[in-house]
Length: 371
Ligand code: SAM
Ligand code: SF4
Ligand code: SF4
Image (cartoon, rainbow, N blue to C red; front, side, top):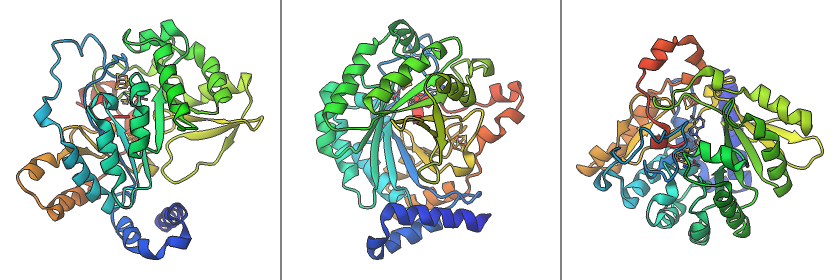
């Protein structure tokens, strides 16, 4: 089993790095092979949350009644600077991360975010540089992001119904603003886009087919996300979760689908092609069909903690040692130890936890470490 996983990993890496240019990359490959967690999962992806602030108040992430004017967000000096993020990222890339994603909170709220994009793009060994955004500020930022080297964009849009959408972002935006961001991204050449839609029973589950048709026609990849019990504030209940199987059935009954194998080890979305050959959707089924066995993601929070799971209770600070003068080698040792000790598989054990135990876990919030 272990060997099969290692071979799969190696095959994926070789494909990604193209065999023809393998020779100069061997040192990087070797390092990647070295860093595995307790379940033999390699470190492959880094999600960088650049701010805990957001201009939306999606009730499933940052409910407006909690995140109001009295809420204390991180003060600026607590945030990692771009130089600090870049330094830590360079070390994490040396340890095997090939794919970087900027997230938040809302990453476009971080001032001069394009400067960070350019700094990360310059790191040797990065295969992919992406961002997840609500797109509200995208029209004014898109050219700068493209010029800075951003490769891919994921845009969150849960429904095309304006009333439902306002409900799902705490009344902060109409659909038109997000569509303007999507059109700007298309014009700048970011195609296909990935579109994230969280599905909540009784909220937007009656609007899924319309969303699917719209993005099929525009050639983008819509990914339906099962509503998750991230953090402690969204009042999550299992009966508000619409399972991936149910979502597939809903779409399939209107627009026939056929399942297809994943693109690479560690891909979180289960892919379905439209039977007419025109496009695809993805299902992120963290609740009903967990994928912890292939989870290769590390998360860096705005104030410099690394987390090894979306449902983690605590992180490991890199900012504190960094700001008292730790060397790259010392920081690398902390990261190695943190990943090496990793045993997270929350989604796989979720159903074995009682409601009471789940309630008592003080998990990190989604807006803090990104999706
Ligand atoms: N603000 C950006 C955005 O919304 O695209 C980036 C950060 S947001 C935390 C990243 C992703 O997490 C979004 O696509 C959002 O829909 C998803 N998300 C947030 N809370 C969620 C929850 N409780 N269940 C499932 N997905 C969630
Ligand atoms: Fe903001 Fe994204 Fe969370 Fe919505 S999901 S509140 S847009 S961080
Ligand atoms: Fe990864 Fe944690 Fe999600 Fe499992 S629950 S897939 S370990 S982030």
